Image 1: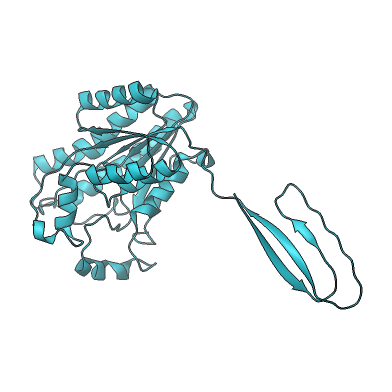
Image 2: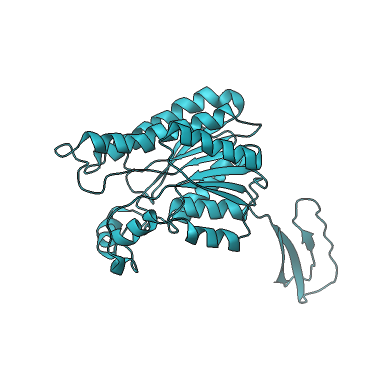
Length: 316
């Protein structure tokens, strides 16, 4: 809470002192004739309070320090949420000499690494966290994730399904698609997400929030047809599962980011994409994290089964 004072010159000789905190309002006047008197306003600005302190959030896909998962983890840490953070290293070839600037090489390097850079930021933020390297497409691994989380913190109150897989070789088109591309993509984006939701729901406590991460291009994604279809499936699952678990007070929502600068958009592609974003700028991971924070809070208790595009107007 921030309390500020504003003084305004009043030429009519009246003096009014007001407390606008909502709890008390008082005034007084005096004097005669025209004289310089000031009105003093005491303004109380109520900062956003999400009521998440002490809750436990499980976030997947956090090893890219420029990514949505890392931004979400840090946003939760600032709210004193206890964290269970899951990541998997994804190996793709990259040029080490090009990792000093935005583009595919930086993005691939980040996703191939461990979570050291993210851990440094979390420690600076004073976060309480448990870090797990695992593969959510594996059912046994998912059970182990929840077993460790519950052993450490007693429950999982919030799940953010951020981990995703896609093909980066150009094979995710109808003319080039392979069974491996289909299976690998759906294994993480659909099966893994379902397994993570199942374990949370089967071990839920008195509080429950599930936030799935899709893409604003899920319905039409030329060039990444399997990835787009997997995210469209996740959006459909969001709606169906929301209906199934509403009886427990658990909400299930989906955030669909537009072109987000997580390290992969180089300057040339940025020039191409900006004209089709009505708000004229790339989405930041923090924009997505802020939306997730709200959906995870008590303030969003009656919001469920929704797909929310955070895209600056892109792909409406």
